[in-house]
Image (tube, rainbow, N blue to C red; front, side):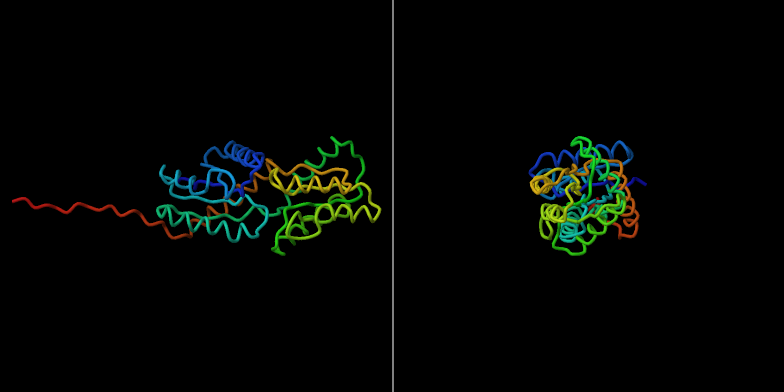
Length: 264
C-alpha cells in the first residue's frame, strides 16, 4: 500500500521569506522521508493553491492525501479555512480520499527550538544577563488558542527560572511592546522576547520592532526550519494517515461499457 501524499498547507504571506521557509521545510521533510510524496501549498498570497497541488496529485494517480495545516494555533484558519479547503477538494476530486491533520500546535518541543534561536540572538547581541522574558505570537480572538500560548510561556519561564509574559501581536493583549514595558516599569531592565512564529513575515517584524523600541535587549528569530518542527509535522501526518483508514473509500469512476451489437 502506497503511503498517502502529504500536502503542507501554509497560511501564505506577501513576504517572500515566509514562502521560502515553507519550501525549505518541505525540502527537509523530503530528505527525512524520501518514501513520501510531499508538496507545499498556501491558503493565500502566494502559489500554489491546495487545489492546484491536489489536482496535480490526482492526475498522477495518487489515491490518498493528508492535508497538514502548517499552523501553530487551532483557531480561525484551522477551524474554518482548512475544513473548507478539504470539503472543496473532496468535491473537486471525488476519486481521492482526503483528510486534514491536526495543526502543529504549541507543542513543548518547540521550546527547544526557541531556546536555540534565543541563545544565538543573545550571543550576537552580547547580552549576558536576563531578568524577564516575553513570549510573542500572532494572537487570536479564540481564548483557548491564547491560553495554549500562556501555558507554553509558563513552561518556558520554568525552564529558565525567569518571570515570563505571553504577548500577542493582534486580537488579544498585552502586545509584545506592552509586555516589555510592564517588566521595565517593574525594574527589570534585561527583557528578552521569544518569537513564537514559524516563519519571518509582517507580524514577526512588528513584534521585533515594537519590542526593541520598548526596550527589549534581545528578540529571537522565528522558529524556522528545524528537526523538531519536521518531527512534529510527521507526527501529525502519521496520526491523520491512520485516521484515513476509517474513512469511506472514495467512489471509483464509472466506466461506461458499450452495448453489445448483435449481428445477423
